[in-house]
Length: 397
Image (tube, rainbow, N blue to C red; front, side, top):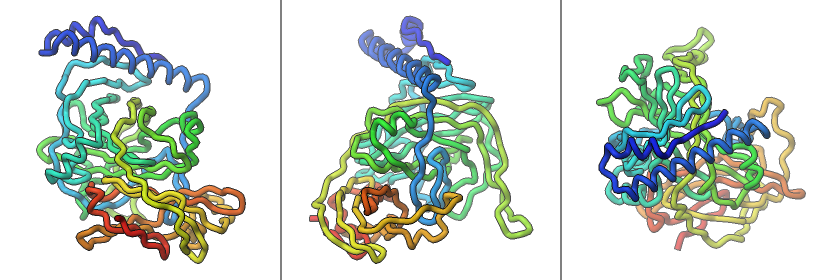
């Protein structure tokens, strides 16, 4: 499988738009470089195979990182959906889908403000940290566009737009009490296994949900949030590979035994694209080394960092867990060494529960735990008053 790009024909198409010769040459060169990267990555995948890193322990379940786990989450407001500023694109054929490098000139906040807050200070922070993407893939009459990305140390979020090429609505959609829709994909974006090994990443966890940023159109937005554990290496500059083959929805109602109705397939296809992870990591390191107790075990803080987007803590617990359940599902996660609520208190007196989900790995006779979570809203770090895990509360000076 290969991708080709002709910079000469691309410049010709750009002549119809108002760009300087220097701008045209620069964009053509960037797209040629992207196509070359994708060709090399495709060759690498054929020769070495690509895979997904494993999910580590969540609050109650361990998931496969190759899946986007939908999780109920409060709706955070609406923002206008991102619009492509350039219709001329270099068309990169990948598998059964088509990836487009659109050269979008939109702001990151056009897509991300609906997720992290639309206030003036918030959109300013979003534009400073996040980056627009503008890569798309089309298969069987449905186009999925990666609109924008934002992130911090160990974690990132991507907003995608899903729409039918004929402009028709997704009639099967229903909205829950949180303003979220029942649409989801069988897979989402991830780094490949070779990259994870090179960076020393030991696992990850994440979730996704869908919402409607602009009710006046028929497009739906999907937000994917993911954290990766076990490595101090930055994710910026690495390639995120998006691969999905099913668009599904959860019908309303219950089965006779009270369980939810099984998901139904809305469309099948081959939606594949790759793009660079790019954002400005504003994480700030805080003093570490504190001793505390978590879930009845002694622990020491190894790393503590905050960002306008979220917080991360790494600590070593003086205990070792037994093997996980054979199914990979943790029915008694509260008994595990790394379990413990993680919360952030802000200067306005509000507290956000970060949750008890975590990634962990063994080192000798101890367990290293890492918790990373994105806030519901982007915040100035000066608005963070303290962080609490176990019986430890760390004030933010």
